[in-house]
Length: 328
View 1 (tube, rainbow, N blue to C red):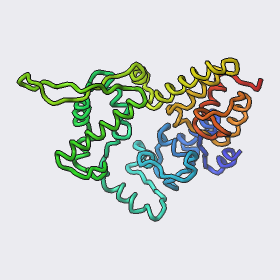
View 2 (view 1 turned 120 degrees about the horizontal axis):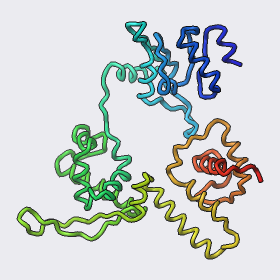
View 3 (view 1 turned 180 degrees about the vertical axis):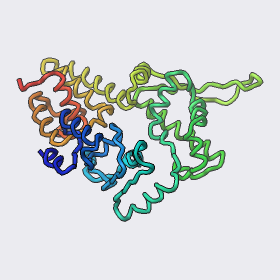
View 4 (view 1 turned 90 degrees about the vertical axis):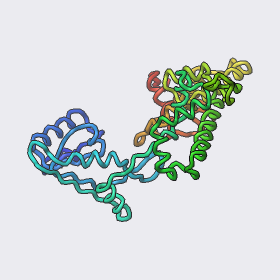
């Protein structure tokens, strides 16, 4: 109704809640110049190419339902929205207006007129990358892992901007100790989750054929190979492993009262792959109703104690929808 009312005044509304017919109508009217103003969400800048002479970004924050507060748009999103300004076939320039909170004004001015350095975030996801290299045979020892890091962009930025990566000592020895400590921590985490095995030390022959320094061997486990092949998060390996062990123990104690399908679904829903699954507006109520129909019991690893707004709840609800649960 709102879209029908605003179209009379030359203003179109574009968002994910429109049906296909309404969305196509608004897009066609704007492209053909029948309406001069299009009010849309930030995702339009990524999905559809609708250039305009003037782009107005009325704010640089959005409400994150998972965090329960307003957060800043990623810089890449702001750039994409600004990039819609300018029609190459009609205009020789485009105009973009960014309305921003006063304390952040200088930040965006600097962002627009001065290039920002690109930093590496490999350290945040190093576990999965290192697990893949171990399974692929590239990394067979801790020393191999350290040498692997020296060929990454992370290592280049580590030397240029050590404070960003919390490196206190930028000397050669300090960098070596930093990398070794990082590799030790990552491999320990992978070993705790059952993805790799850190074996006994072995001697590496030097150029003269004599025994050199001792290094710790690193090899993949069967679970690690499976996780690497199917691109599973290393933490999911530990969750599945512990969940299956608990199910095995529970089945031997209470085989009659156990619903294997629900128990396995709870284990899968606790995996980290579902952590980015969003819960849309009012979907928590639908999840609560669906989970009640599924008659799931409270459990620590699955959907627990009325939690209907988290990733695990959403995953469980999606599993129920896929099975066609209808309340029976």
